[in-house]
Length: 235
Image 1: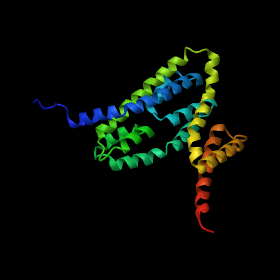
Image 2: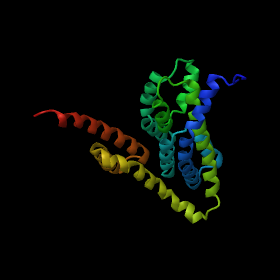
Image 3: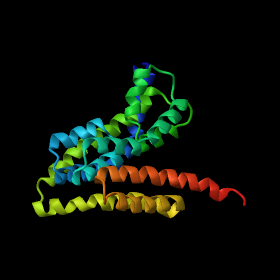
Image 4: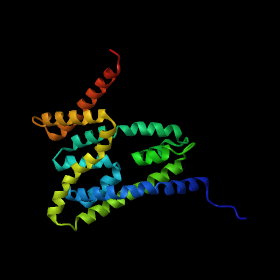
């Protein structure tokens, strides 16, 4: 019998591609929506696709669109998305404990593609996770996100202008839909959202909307985290 010429790295990469298909399929509607909304917000097709190529994080990209639609400056957008993505430091540290030892540059490459969904697939893999497997999951997910961003942008161009403009409201509906499951499960998230909304409404009266969102988010998060332990201490 002829021995297989496929190397172990190629086999684990193929397995990563296979197990990343579910993530790629899940990205299809979200990426199409992002591309469509990017078109209605006024971005060019190149700008929309480049954002998906260089950022590759759905929540941050939708947030950036929301801030762009209200005329927020670049510095506020960068700072807000940084805060939104701080959790990726923790995910990277967690996956590093399971991943095989490899060159830092290779790890930096797949760290870029460590979205919530990619992390969920790779971190739940039994045993040590190989670099080639992580790249398999990452690359098929990445390709789906970028290509379907372009598809969504192209679809948006065929719709009447009045519908395109009205779809910017879908940004707010999307954020509510993302927040709703957490509101049901965790009371702290509800209070966090409520306090942030009140503070943002107050701050927006005397400062730019972008900075009011940032300041409201930081203050509400600090306040809720400070108050939470005090509730649990015995009187």
